[in-house]
Length: 321
Image 1: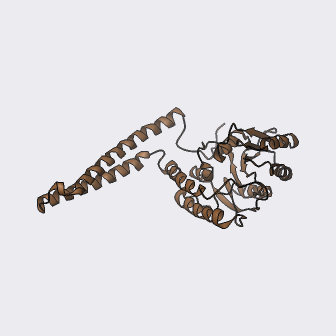
Image 2: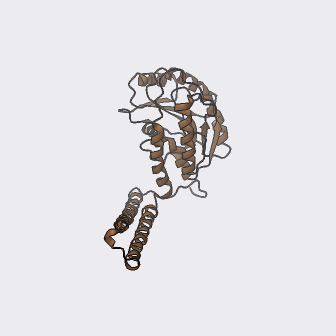
Image 3: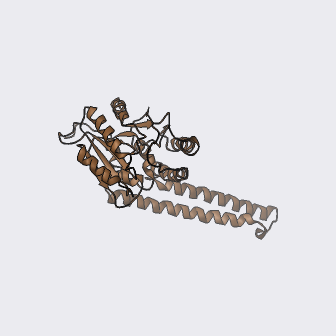
């Protein structure tokens, strides 16, 4: 699709939180890189409630460089919300995500675009030679990447790398909440996006303080439960809850039958068999899970009907005006 003359084709999205020391150099370097690309572009910087003078620096960049735009959030709400705001304010056909800490190399944007033009919808950066401490940064990241790839089925070496390039039609429909920015590539994959991975340059942080720690690994594990549910069971929650209810009910029935067998054939009183109480507990839990699944089915239908949102994604079409 050819963009309008006044519409950027590439939008670079940059969440910012307390990066006043890095923004001047980032603006200069990014502006130089974008000038070398043969396409119109814009840069959307979202200040996520910084407590330093980051937004003042963003305002300077907006005045100095054409195509730079700034958004300031009311308070610090996290990288996911900041990225969501950037997506909403972007107007390009291609959306590139970039960190503000200068560890991502803007010169890699041209390489990402070349790979995307080979027929892909998403190109994810891979910090193959990562310049971070091994114990508290790289090791947890490696474990998390393996787990995410296994659970989602979208295999990447580096989910944590912010440097990624998307076709906007795969990013615009997404509604991001919580800490889901790590899984945007997986969500695009769920829609049928063709995903590629490209080793990119990773630079050591020279100014400012990292906003991440080892505690985020535990958040990843919890968020994965939501991601898996959104992929496999959002449109059919009865399969998850109802299936679990049926299993619990069958286990309860088996234990109850074993209790009756011991009573009538081994002459063991029911009161002497704790397995009987357990069977009742399993049956009740199973019944509740089935009811929960039915309620979830009703809510899912309300969700899709009210928003007039289809349960599918159209990659492309032909023959329509």
